Image (cartoon, rainbow, N blue to C red; front, top):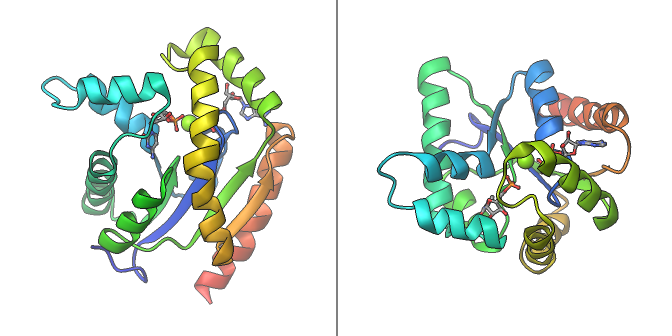
Amino acid sequence: MFDHNDVFVIFVLGGPGSGKGTQCANIKNDYGFVHLSAGDLLREEQQREGSEFKELIQTCIREGKIVPMEVTIALLEKSMQEAIDTDGKKRFLVDGFPRKMDQAIKFEKMVVESQFTLYFECSEETLVTRLLKRGESSGRIDDNIESIKKRFQTFKDTSFPVIEYYEEKSKVRKINAEQDRESVYIDVQKILDISLQRSDA
Ligand code: ADP
Ligand code: C5P
Ligand code: MG
């Protein structure tokens, strides 16, 4: 368990293809956050020689289902500890997590409480176009129309309630992710500049 006053976590949420990874790369560059994508960590674990979770992860990803939280939380916690131990870095963007209420509750109880959530809001119409385009080169087993439909359903049924939960706590900073990359990042910077100033005070 990390100290919430010492380890700073921003959750980054939004539908698949909303630009979480793209914007986290910008934030990492300009603000020095460590970027941890839950999906990337799961894909790495799925490819790791000797992993007992290979098949489970692959099936969940293809079907757009949420991997059992213990697996994902353990991967995140390990990466956070490594960043702290090797670089002394304590500011994290946790991208694509929590995607289910149980992940949110467990992570904040057992790892660290989040500061707030950046939510990239985007229509399905835009998301599907972006994901199919990304699928031309991503090599991802879930960037095809069948998996995309399943991922949208999971987002609506399972992940959106997490955003509503944090909204009730006034911990969501919403961004219009329909815009071009540069305009989205301008809005991201405005929010971060205000929020980080507050937390420094
Ligand atoms: P996520 O991590 O939320 O799934 P990505 O950052 O991988 O989303 O973005 C999905 C795809 O859309 C990528 O191919 C990315 O290059 C592209 N993309 C990201 N942001 C924008 C944007 N604002 N406008 C158009 N395309 C975008
Ligand atoms: O965020 P990304 O689109 O890379 O996630 C890909 C897949 O990884 C999700 O559709 C889901 O199957 C799995 N995932 C998960 N729990 C998370 C993040 C991702 O199960 N918190
Ligand atoms: Mg991503």
